[in-house]
Amino acid sequence: MTDESRGIEAAGPPWSVDLLADLHAGVLDDDEAARLWPLVQADPEARAIIDALEATTADLADLSADVPPMPAEFAARLDAAIAEESRRAFPQQQPGVAPVVSLDAARRRRNKRIGWISGVVAVAAAAVAAVAIAIPGGTSPSSGGNVAAPPPGQSAPQPPLNLRSDQAASAVGQMQGTFDYGPLGGADALQRCLTAAGFADTAKPIGVRQGSIDGQPAVLTLLTTGQLAKFRLVAFTPTCGSDNAGVLLDKVIG
Image (cartoon, rainbow, N blue to C red; front, side, top):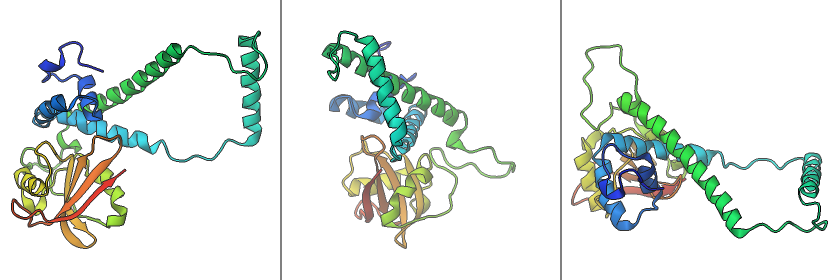
């Protein structure tokens, strides 16, 4: 997919969902991706769409769980129905010989299916993003009128998220779209920790929570990997900084 209406060189608000989906999927070349990521991270609407894509692909990945095999009785009936349909469609075909299909035609059908699936993901992400933009932080308004709003780009304080390193996958759903920097105070301090740990400046978290890992106090940071439904969880000590990476855990999950 490409941003056909405006061209990739004109990328910016209003963002094309197709272009953001390509960027999220890692199909753009490295130079274009390096140019676009800072623009996307600086734009709340673009970030909302990227976050929605992450959530959507994670939900789709859950659909790939193992399922029990089809009962033999139904499998036999299905095979018989397919064979009968094949005989009707190809009456001159020898029994037991599969019909020859044009490779180009097969590729066209495959590409059509891929395009349809990508479109569904993009539309679903756009819908989720629209809600996220309309209701910042994805939370409902508080009934109390005296509660101070969190600083821009930061969520309201969250309960500590206490994890075990061997069960880190449970963090994904609890962290996406939440930015509670805890003792670090804000995004700039966390960015210094990321830089000290060797991450590029373009590595922007999609979720931050204070808590612990294996009983050690930590600032938990969730990043994308460029791969479908895979995330990178990094746990920093609360004292991390420019001269102290303080990495307690660095793990790819999903």
